[in-house]
Length: 309
Ligand code: CP
Ligand code: NVA
Image (cartoon, rainbow, N blue to C red):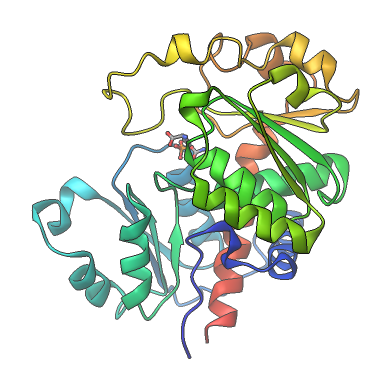
């Protein structure tokens, strides 16, 4: 049987996404009761970029599922010396139950998934951060009930992985997704098109706007992300000037729905994309969101293994 992969948010149908979230809630309620990796079976977790949350949550989650996390940093592997993605896939998939990879281009994940006999999971690429999106959806569900029909407003770098995953993953869950950023930082047109097609089937919607007040007014969820994503540190662009006015601050929160929650995938830069009073305030759900990485990724691994075997 062909393995199921999760390298893009819409690799799960809306119903499958819902199954993973429901399983995550069950796993959260009984952390050590689910052991699909008993053996222990090994899951390789590869990092081409820095990480705290992803590294911690995958390593702990794989162990809690009864498995062995093999965490590898790129610089210590032969890939850093030029060994191909294809040859690496052929070595890993004979020994591992799944491959988790944080890397740069989405095309690299596609090449790995194209060849691997075991599930490949995107732990963040330049284009998408789908595991984070599952955690965000679980957090919405815990705080506000079903995400379907809820409005999420994202302010900031609208051309990064989180903006794209809010689009694809959000409309997959039937959300109304408003993306708001400056003209020079607009989402990938291909992702916008895919999201609009998906929204037409799920009852969600996509709105792109440059007006932060219009974006946040009445929203159920406010979200943002760093202005400088991994790998963009030295691109020479003046992001501080470009993103001025796109901060999630107390005024933005006051314009949102009274019950609104605030999400940020972290790491956060207080005083830049988000005001400290908001990140650390009572409507912030960011610590639940960070913990939920653990639960959704455990559910995802269990689900992918069950579907592909
Ligand atoms: N949110 C997130 O993916 O965090 P890390 O970069 O620390 O893994
Ligand atoms: N957009 C951010 C997310 C970090 C978790 C980045 O790619 O650095």
